[in-house]
Each structure stands twice: as structure tokens, then as C-alpha cells.
Amino acid sequence: MQCIIKMRAKAPNVADLTVIKAAISGLRIGSCCEYLERYKPRTVGELFDVMQEYCKSDRGAGEESKP
Image 1 (cartoon, rainbow, N blue to C red):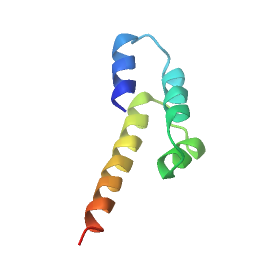
Image 2 (cartoon, rainbow, N blue to C red):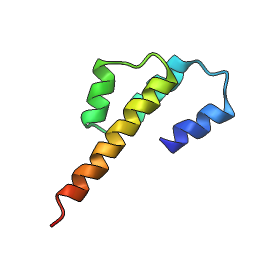
Image 3 (tube, one colour):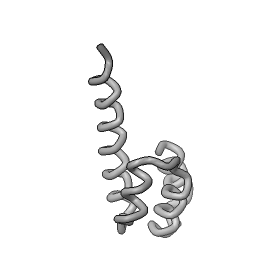
Image 4 (tube, rainbow, N blue to C red):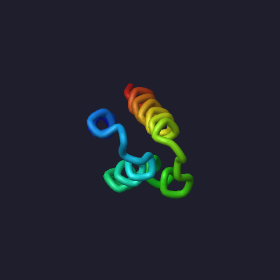
């Protein structure tokens, strides 16, 4: 996700759709990728919101499974 933010900062005139497609194509198969494929965000802001929620839930799931 950080590389997408850096890319966006270096090229602010790149269309949101281009950034969204690049981000989705760079994801490994998983629940976040599947969600983004089905419900494509309309803005980079929406993309970041979805990705942050999945990052939070992944971290939380790992912590809960520890004894």
C-alpha cells in the first residue's frame, strides 16, 4: 500500500482509475483482492479505505489466534 501512496505522490495527475487498476492487479489473491475485483472503488480514497480495513482485520485475526 505504501508503494501506491508514493506513486500517487510522484504523479498526482495520474487518473484514479489507473491507480486503482494498478493496485488491484498488484494484490495477491485473498479476500481484499476478491472484494476489490467485485466492488471496484471509484476513487483512490475509497481504495485506501477498503485496503486499510482489510489490513486492520488481518492484523486483528492474527492476534486473536495467538494463545
